[in-house]
Image (cartoon, rainbow, N blue to C red; front, side, top):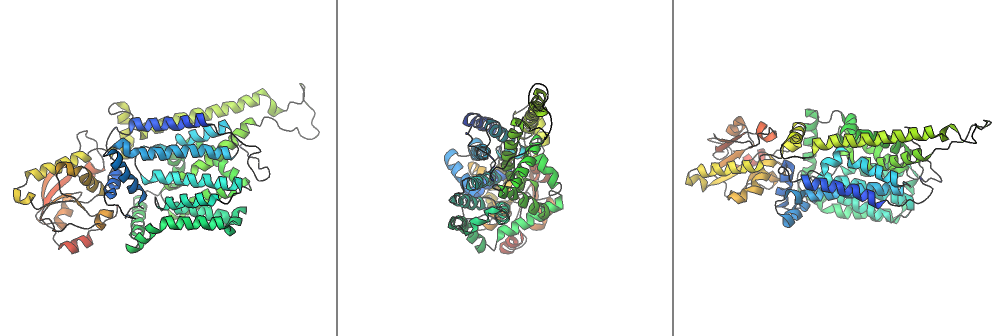
Length: 532
């Protein structure tokens, strides 16, 4: 599809465009309703349990991430209690706002109704945005901050009002409190400034104010990292090495197409990138995609880290598509004679216009059909039946929402089977943050002791005093339990009534009752730290 974008006087559009509120808000509302109706279908995900666990121990930082997501989880639990729909409503809100901002980007770039609706629909039906609305994840909010920064950058370049640096600085600071991978976007922003006419803003006091605002917002988390010997960096380094070893960083380029965007939206992304690079005014946005892409490619990052960069490409690509669809007049070659019927050229023919409409219709049909297939994979439409089976077969994340409450029930049953003297001196230790989170969130209803955990921030919080003499041990193999603890015996099996095979039932099926660690508690704890 030969998209092209005119750049009159360094601008994409030649006149103001109206924001098409009704269709854009209808798409966003449909996505919100879809998630609200389905997000309570199964149970909490392993990652959500970790956020909720950390939310009970609020600090300016955590081992696995900055503090914003646990802070929002704390608000959710205060407002809604242990509600799946309540917790995930924060992610749903973030994704719906990202959709509206995508439409606003298309509008600011000169796009009319077709461009705004096409850009919004392309993002709404892409795999990563759909997934982000199904879970409470820090990536859901990271997605919003990337899109916000791109929108603010377009407003800055369109209006030439340097005060937009305050908005950029605020969003960047909040982004750093959400997920550190936003540093890749910051790199693209700064390099894009240096390589384009936007470099003039380096001398602006508003740019310096924006930078100061970013630093001020991020400073508490940075100081927390300093006090904890940059344990967050140690975590990221360990996880990165694990991902490379497991092959999770392979296929980075292919997964941009398969995971980050709707396959049928790929032409919009290509056209969008080309449109930015051809525009003197908006060229910086092109570098805001290219630089993170190159850095992540060579650093062997996970493919989904780049997903939030695509809405700005789809916005520009949709504007280009709209202009291509409308450009039915082409000047005849010099010296060419007018054809019979007046001055109509080949491009003016109804057949040419009809051909373009067919291409657009095929694009929209493909976009919707691919989005429907992706939705069936990612969204729990049914509690039982063929759609449930289809989704559970293909989505490890959905399978990981089963069995956590049953795990806690099993632990409570094992506790009740112990002699009174062991129950009086009992502790629960978990090897995985999902098990730790389940015990901490659901355990109080069964009057279970606060769990100990050796992974991520649970390890950082240390062990209880006095130390328990009897331990219920979760998330360890028999060999690991015997090597670390005394007098271990198999006490129960972990699974779920639905018979869903997931990471927990497959890799951590055994529950043990053991005595104290073989090493003294301080030495045991020092050696037990694990990142995951």
